[in-house]
Length: 70
Image (tube, rainbow, N blue to C red; front, side):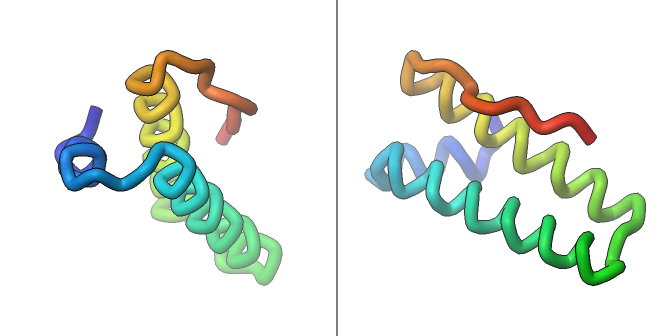
């Protein structure tokens, strides 16, 4: 789990709030892709967001949800 994610969990942010934040950032990245702003950095960012989501799901004892394949 990333240092930032650990800090958010330690800071008391709720699981649902963290997952909603990740989903919001993923949606923003998807919108940028649809608008033609796609490149290696975007692919790396989407991979990072999926890793955060996976780590959060594992930390909460749940599944990772839908998988994002980039």
